[in-house]
Image (cartoon, chains in turn brown, cyan):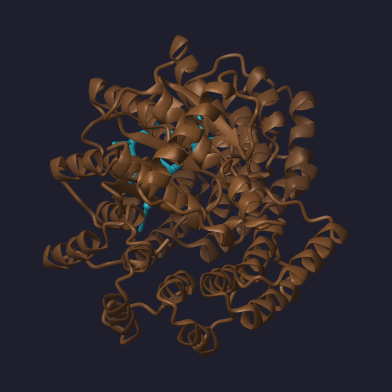
Amino acid sequence: MSKFSDDHLVSLIVSSTGKSHLRQIHAVLLRTSFIRNSDIFHQFLSRLAPRDLDYSRRVFSQRTNPSVSHCNSMIRAFSASETPSEGFRLFRALRRKAFPPANPLSSSFALKCCIKSRDLHGGLQIHGKVFTDGFLSDGLLLTTLMDLYSTGGNSADACKVFDEITERDTVSYNVLISCFLRNKRTRDVLFLFDKMKNEVEPDGVTCLLALQACASLGALDFGKRVHDFIDGNGLGGALNLNNTLVSMYSRCGSMDKACEVFNRMRERNVVSWTAMISGLAMNGFGKEAIEAFEEMLKCGISPEEHTLTGLLSACSHSGLVDEGMMFFDRLKSGEFKMKPNLHHYGCIIDLLGRARLLDKAYSIVQSMEMKPDATIWRTLLGACRVQGNVELGERVISHLIELKAEEAGDYVLLLNTYSSVGKWEKVSELRSLMKEKSIHTKPGCSAMELQGKVHEFIVDDVSHPRKEEIYSMLAEINQQLKIAGYVAEVASELHNLDSEEEKGHALTYHSEKLAIAFGILMTPPGTTIRVTKNLRTCVDCHNFAKFVSRVYDRVVIVRDRSRFHHFKGGFCSCNDFW
DNA sequence: TTAGGGTTAG
């Protein structure tokens, strides 16, 4: 074996990939003096550990005096494995022996172990030692620490750590941005995207994160700016960025732009197709989503679970019952090499519920091979609301209570179900129960972006500086719509008001109506009105928007909790399957 | 997986 030189051996190690090959190399090392060479052993272990953790655990424990890098290779491998907590245990054991000496890299790897195993306590221990260890100037360790707080939902502490980093680079900014995104501070993401440019250059990851924030806010204009930045900085060819752009434009209700990006892509994978299918689904283009799915199969790309979710939700949002059931059967048959998951079931139950086939939906819930989760029950509850099925609605709520998963929105759905069939005594009973349980409903809130500024409205909003104009515009719209045949749908109103007139009055000030009135007031004729709503839009507001689109000849795009409604010429893209 | 490390698509 002496024919090996150091260089030969190292290149052999570096080029080997298989477990057995690496074990053979280990045998060679053991038979020669190379095993005593710390550098070569490091090369070997860093190659072996991520590929064969069990074997490297043994190899490592046989080493009498492991070096810093040997230990780090092990901790690193654990941090990427299924048993990350073992990495932290190893780190602690080594620290107790104080050999090899502490170093920022092993602290970083150990932190990763804690983050992955959701061990906040362990992570805090490492943070507690950063100062005494003298690692305060290690930007990379601090960046990992930010991620610890970020995953623990503590963005304030992540910010504090960020402030302590003396030399921030793009990655430290990215980690902060990803922290904001994860913790729903989406506006801060956009702010930081602009601000960081004074210090460092945003990269592809930054753009990816910023696009996700735009998608979640529905901030189309900002999204376009990020798109320009991508093209202007030579990042336009990246597959992941293009996929995210398709998703961002879809989630901002701009299918034209989403298709444009998709059609221009030189390379497409299953994620690209899934983004496109889900985007079409979300925007009510069910037939087009199905066409895209078939096109994808023709291209020889196999669908994944997300793809089927997009496809089935396309069917449910467009009321394509037969098509949806057909795809569901094909899914169950194993044609797509997967089994239906909770999301797929959710789509099918939604589809049947919207189509008023409640019994069938319920029997599918009962036949599921896995335990229905809260979302499944909630979907069924939505169907009960559509159909005014009080009895099943009550049963569903009891399932949610059993799962300890009931939310304010669920009670609102049940309230809606009661009020839709005029059970006012039940409504007030449930209201007092909610009071007792101190369940607070989220107020409906609609937002409209106007020249880069977001205007928000809540029900009966009187806080807007131009409220008087808005309210008189709304009164005028109501007048015009009435002439065109619009009648307020009183069942949408939750409260048991005394007269029909009063009910009609209370409806007038739903947040989306205020936002639409504001849009008509502030934009020139013909401009598309885009409204984003935090909850599901009610029957009456849906009707209202349809009439507005015809009477005022405007395209009105309302983003709901989960989907878009494109109103044009008195019709909605959802075919009233909202 | 090219530099022992931190961020990343549907």
